[in-house]
Length: 399
Image (cartoon, rainbow, N blue to C red; front, side, top):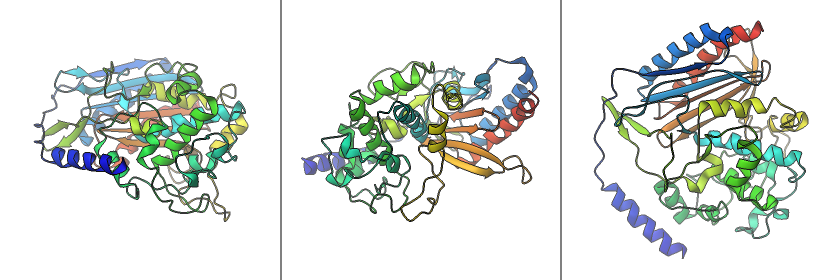
């Protein structure tokens, strides 16, 4: 069966390689702006943020860009500039849904934290205790902590020795209706190291974690996220990115080109909903971030565990200071060398999109940023968040 699937996907890949690329679309010169100010104390900061978005859209060469800011549990501003759909002339707004790529991992981590609080999952119990029909027996001894911190030994897309699965992750054509079924993409892959002995950032870790969460609760993963995260936080615009159905409010995604953009080819992200297959708005993402400061939603001791960079079996902290579903920087200097500050964050690069979600625990401030094309580098895109944060931080310090 694996061999048949491999040949079929290979033929499809060869066919796709011969397809003629779509034409370049020019981005209209008139740039629409959408903004909502929820707290008048931040009016000047909102003006500054709007100017930052307009400049960023032009400099990055992307059609549309959105952002939102939350302080002490309340959204104070949300805005968007540019286009959600260049061809149809649909402006980007604060309600536009973007692919959030690996920021999905932070969403899944939020669901995991809720299950830890409820006593449904123990981070250090082998996942074999939660999932009886394990596709690969070598996975049984892995723990949820290792999966959430990318220390379980699973390969990434490039190292995947499951040949049919590796091609499937490139083609992104197959529909998976269940997260357990999607483990087929890497269930034949060799481990890179024994669980806990190394670090390798991989979406496969979180894909397997989502199957464990589903098995532990007896609830389909997407429904589980809805129950534990989306509905309690009123994140009505966050859900799986479905290829086979209409998704109201979803942006069109693009590839930057000389003198314009090209629509990104159609892809199916169902093989990685938990790790990179969700869509959301910047406004919804700051709700998610703000919820982490609420001990009634996630206990303080659980938050501390989830935000602590994880150690390997030899006692050393992993090389990326990766925590559980989040990256945690204790001494970032985005506000200058003389002002180190803690920052918890996750970013994502998807097919025709980039996403960036940052939490500043000291001020209970959350900032989210999304675009519907890939910038030349992620750093160029993410740098705009620091500029927006500086504009709002000055007001937050006085309140």
